[in-house]
Length: 277
Length: 237
Image (tube, rainbow over all chains, first blue to last red; front, side, top):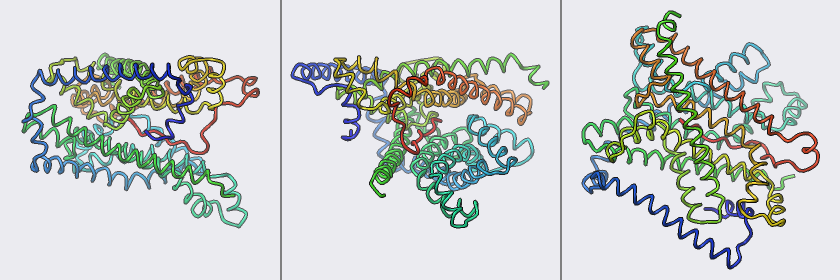
């Protein structure tokens, strides 16, 4: 890992002397053995049930298999992108509503945010899936997935934006007022540009949440990656392999997004720490 | 209303199962997550690496993918678990990664001087952690750990997709039987909301109980608060 995380935790123990180094070496060797034993046990269990056979894994390098999963990946990215495109601005509006002076507006926004933050997305998905047909409304499967994603994500991003707006220095409001801007103008021209910059890393993490939420396409039968995995299982019967590959794709995507968010956050922290005044 | 009167045993089973899934998953996750956090701050490089890899995998895998992999994949490698325990296992594995990260960042909020002072009076690695770092770190961790609990609660609804009879599953089944969708989903929503409000309330009580008293707060430099905005963890679902 990076040097920074080493220094942050190095402080818990002294720089080891010769005896300490020997002990660390011994414990390292033992833990390597332990970890290897756990992995070996897992692989052995896989092998014993014939799940390690090469012909069950190699097909995932074939272009038709990859294209099949790629189709799902496109669905996942479409759903995530569309949900983010609507949910983020909507979340910002909700945050502004919650911070508004008008008590009716702010309590409605607060209730909306707390409700959708407190209930599981699957519940919203089922509600759409089962309630809408009862009223004779039919929605394409894409929207069956994306609308619940928007509802849930807008509530969580509203809180992100609110935190960002509150994190902007109080003096900025006063400065805005001092040069004759109305509160609305101050918000638009002074506070929001800074707040949005502040929350950018958190928004990338919200994207990770959305990507995870899009797996619920599995429930509404929208053709995203997890559901495409299920289709693949019903054709090939390689259950473990397909779901491992699908999960691995999600892990890599989310890992990259998380790393990007952390890097951006660290960069902004360094900038903020740099002596400007 | 009629539906609740008629089907209350089923609804109660669902709520009970939700609570059981959440509590079991969370308690196991606390144990596993703490162990992982200790590994991540330990001087043993392979343990640090293993814990890091664990966290990166289980914090980035969607919970639904994990549950499907466990519930439908494990039988294929010769391990048959009841679906309820598949749910508990999935919630544990996923929440443990978040617990680990929160404990680790809690440890990092304790000023370095405290650890150095503790080491200079002769405490070893576990002594420093146990008597100096963790008691202080725990205070800053209460709120994030409550959030992990709420995440586990919300996440437990995904066990409906692997046919565990918890609240969301019961709601969906009743809806098929009675076609009273809007009402049923409001009821289920209220159930989840009250459970997470309850957890948040308990968290505030715990935080108040472990918060340093006025006398101590005035005496020394409290745990360093992260300046400005703290990067919030991604949701678990």
